[in-house]
Structure formats: structure tokens, C-alpha cells
Image 1 (cartoon, rainbow, N blue to C red):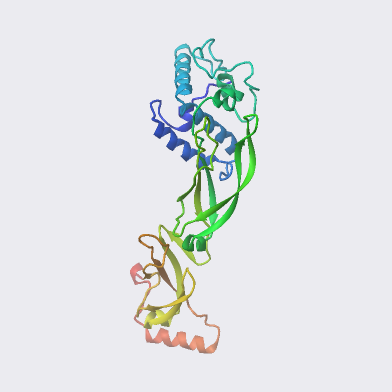
Image 2: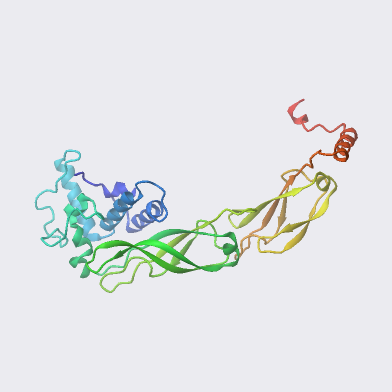
Length: 320
């Protein structure tokens, strides 16, 4: 088996603080958690990330792992042929014992099992420890209307739990989630106590839900602002007009298109974006829609326009 570099797995330096490790773990958990990742080997990578976090967040295990890594560095070990040096774990309570459980359990790598013992990780020794439960991460996709108005939704997640024997297992669970008005893409909703159970009377971890907002037929989101393409006719753009516009929260407002409006011009409706302490705005991007010349009257109108605007050259900036 190969020696696992848990610092490399989390992308942190040997002297990383607990806060550095926690941040690195959360970032990778969001990337590889089976509920959100589309990568083919996400479960294997998530296992490796969990292992690294389990060892480096535990002071005793980290000290033992660092001592083992130092011995390996001094003595050398053929690549892919690592075996723990005899007696390396003297003085540590978590070394693998005769009742530690099978070393080839699917939730743990061979390296982890040979060092700390798969069964012990969730077994008797940890029952005597005091440790807050691990945080979990998942992603939810909501409608824009939920982000604007707030909502309460039920979600089903594939979650890891601990069975009566102290072994991890996967199961589906349904949770009720309150979505606050004004939530933005990439923001987290925290469900306290919905992570992994704690040990020794310590509280459970939390579940962090990363918000994703489903694409909308009319609006797109940038921070708290909303953008919508507003088609206008050539005459409305040239002469100016009052046009009706639907709003994200429902209803219709009348906006003024100024004379000589250009394609791509932005009109701002203040406070019509995502709600918040400082609400976002709704921006209307003008798009001049040309009527088809599909009848005699329309063709005659275009011919009259061409004669009336002979000095207009839309390609002047090209030098032609």
C-alpha cells in the first residue's frame, strides 16, 4: 500500500492551523460530496478528504501521524510498498487492537485501517472521547421566486450516519429548510445540529447548504441585482415611448424609453432586485427588435426610412 500524505490531500502545509485545516476541508467537501459532485471518483476523493480531516483535526492522531511521517522520511520507503514501522504507535491509545474490526471496510483506505483501525475510528475508543460532530455540506437548487420572497421547502439528501455498531452507513433523509428572502447564489444556509453526531455528550455538527438558483426564463442574477432583456421596436427606441415591463415579484410597471435609445442601453429600476439591507436593482437591457418586411406596407415603410435617413451609416466606425 502507499503512504498517504494527508497534508497534500487537504492542500495545506505541515504547520497548518486547525482553522486552516477546517477551511480546506469545507472547500473540498463542497467539491467532492456525493450529493453535489459530478466527478466520477467523488466518493473515493471524499473518503480521502474525510480521512485526512479525521487525522489532522485530532491532536493525538496528528501528533502520531507526524511522528510516523518523520520516521518514514528518515528511513525511506519504496513507493507503493509502505508498511508501518514496528512499534511506531507506542504510547497512543488509538492503535489497532484485536477487536478493531475489519481493515478492508469500504469506508476507509487500507493505509488508514492499518494505522488507526477502521473499526476503532467509530468504535469503543471514540465512545470515551469528547468531540463535536463533523459538519456536513450539500447543495440545494431553488427558484428565483423563493430567493425573492423566502420559502419553506423539504429536501431529501443522501447522508452518512452511524449505525448501532458505530459503523458509517448511507441513508436518505428529508429535512425542512427555511429559505430567507434575499438569499444569493453561493450563500450558505446553516442547519444547526444536522451534521454528524457528537461524541461524549458533545453536540452534533451542522449542515451547510450551498444555495444555487435555477436559471429563469427572463432574469439573470449578479450579486443582488437582476438583469432582463427588454425588446423595443425601432420607433420606440428612436422616438421614445412608455412600455410595460413585468417585475420579478409579480405585477407590471411602466417604464420610459428615452428618445434615441441605443441597443444595449440599460434602464435601472431601483430596489427591484433581491431584497436585503440594501436591496438590489433591476436592470433592463434594451434590445431593438426589427419588424419583418413581410408585407407591402412594411416594405414601403423600410424604403421610406432608407430615403429619409440617407446620411445614416452604421458602419462608419469601420471606415467604410
